[in-house]
Image (cartoon, rainbow, N blue to C red; front, side):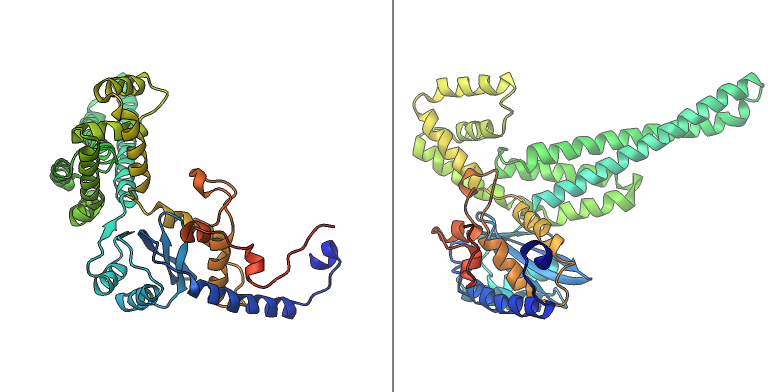
Amino acid sequence: MLRDLFDTSMSVGAVFNVVHEAVVAAREINARQDLSRVRIGAHDEIFQNRRPVLVGADADSTYCYLLAAEDHRDADTWGIHLLDLADQGLRPEATIADGGTGLRAAQKLVWPSVPCRADVFHAQRDVGQLATYLENRALGVMTMRDTLERRMVRAKRRGQGKTVSKKLALARQREAVAVGLADDVAVLATWLQADVLVLAGPDIATRRELFDFIVEELRARELLCPHRIGPVRRMLENQRDDLLAFAEVLDGKIAALATEFQVAPEHVRSVLALHAANPKRTERWHDEAELRGQLGGRFYGLFEATAELARDTVRASSVIENVNSRLRPYFFLRREIGPAYLDLLRFFLNHRTFLRSERPEREGRSPAEILAGEPHPHWLSLLGFERFRRN
């Protein structure tokens, strides 16, 4: 490419040396980054060639502060990295992670007072996958029943209906059970997502009551499909407090806003719900008009405050999933460089500016700029290279 497109001759060895020099510079810059402004950290584990890669990122800026390939993902390995990050100033208000035992055990040792919340995305995904599986199973049973009914019609014409009747009766029974189970679990999955783990939802006590109800309803149906319902039910049961940890913090902030604007907490929740409502539905605008009439001049200030509250409330480790999706395309490359390329990759992702984003404040800025609150030179210039300029 260099020879044919840029009329430049360069050996593979020269490229290797350039990259390794850049790795050293990137590693030094990574180590100098002040992490004290990280508010919510997101942690996860992904794999490269069956080796775990430990990942950590800031939920607000998406700055990736940990990217390390290791032989193990136990508490000791995670703990060493968390201690190193603590030396860079990292001490978040809370972290969000899946059910990984190693990273959670390490955090209890390093930051015993920092809560590790559960990622609601994984819980919703697991329950949703269960509902989809049961729906597909019900459709399969319905297809079998339909096939037997067709066979029964043909058998009756030949006077042999009794040969199929028993199988058809059993298929109808199985269909009723399978369809009923699929419908019930689908309703429970909807309640979990729309009423329990939703941002604009009831208070923590009500959420816990609804959550426990869903768990018990799954338990009551567990014998109908133990190999699929059982693991999901146990996951929800074991992670209830961690999954609902965000709601407890949210209740405190809602109470503070209610005091500040001298309104009832229910009004704050109603205004918060407007931000998640579909603007194309007339009910949303009807609700807003009603709240404006009730709150008067306090509505606009409360609307802005709840918008900020919605942005600041982190329920899922979506940022880490986003970082993981950006990392994976690179994992099959640069094998000749070794694990050190992860330092360079982390530097590159943290210092390359966002071309677009769902959050306008991120556009045209890099994760490092958002985290530090100040601009920095182009990432190539930071590494000591002179950028090409068109004549």
